[in-house]
Length: 239
Ligand code: PGA
Image 1 (cartoon, rainbow, N blue to C red):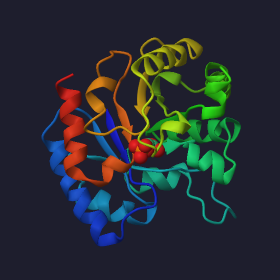
Image 2: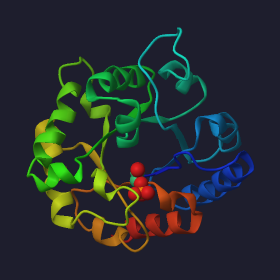
Image 3: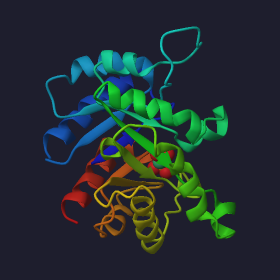
Image 4: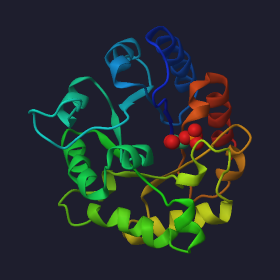
């Protein structure tokens, strides 16, 4: 599975053009391909790619039922808009909006209940890694997902070291492999889908994909360029 997170990029016309290109990429592969456009453009993009293999998701949502929650969208809305999945707990949301694994866990349950799949982002900061705390931090981020009463088999985890996001610095293959193993161990799910995210590009993808611990990628910057994204998908297919 290769997913693109557009973050806060694109005006509407650019978004529709990019989505059309992504659709072409998705149609040319058996790999599951998804994009997370800004929520304002999601509805129209879902309509335009409805008859294709391209999955559309949102970049975040909350667990709450309908109510007075200014600026939020909930799982029922995400499903009603025709999305296939939702990113949850991206480090940019954790940092800027104070989201925590405790607040994210109910949203994971809400997304699963609608029949969509959640992609839960976890990852340590550079300070944590330098202090030898990376495993502990990621285990703490995963812990609230356990014992919630939902089936963890339906959850996708994206391991995104914070220091690798948008920096051009990719974690080493050894770091990626060890953390993906650790995530499956902590959640006691050997078959779990675990994506890597953080400066995935046409240049870095082949090495990242060379381990069978890696189930795919969550791509930020390079997902804004359909050619780069297609090259990443090609690297996955020839791994
Ligand atoms: P990046 O972002 O590929 O630009 O590093 C990844 C992400 O934040 O999901």
